[in-house]
Image 1 (cartoon, rainbow, N blue to C red):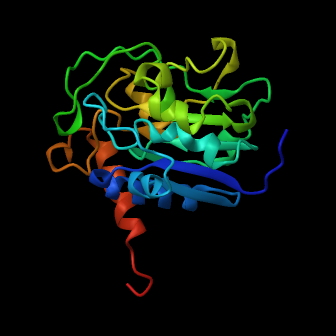
Image 2: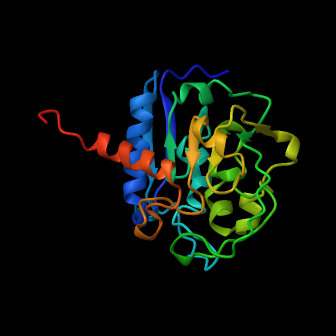
Length: 236
């Protein structure tokens, strides 16, 4: 098992969700009891490097729908790394997630059973149902075992092949993250879990969007509180 003293975290970045990204980053720093390194996956920067060049898919709902799969390459196919969507809020130390790494697997995730009922999500983006929906929204990459995710593959493979982990030889290489990480707000009916999850996820759209400011109730208020705390001045 790799003993990297710094936890590398890659965050999906979409300019429409800059506020969400900034609040997530602050929540990670504030709660972590280990050193962390955070790298937002900014599409324009990846294009400037020449490692991301695929055309925008009309079915992709965020700028980072596919860039997330470049994490092993960006990690030089070495060690472990975390990827997470930006529309999340961390409440506990990310070390607890990091410690779940298991070298028996190529990638680890929360194995959601999410079959969306709605046809649209935030900003009127299409909500597409497919097997392993939301599995790729939080991943622990065992980068040395993800060499199939080459620049060429990530830029040319279909969205379904990427998000359904068809680049692996079998589902037995997908480990499961436990502990209620990546709780999908508005998807699960067990609302009490919203308040116990160490990482909550507004996959349908979060309170940083004007139209959704109050949709998730107390959880929306928690996000605004985290935002206000991140913006607090020391001399107040």
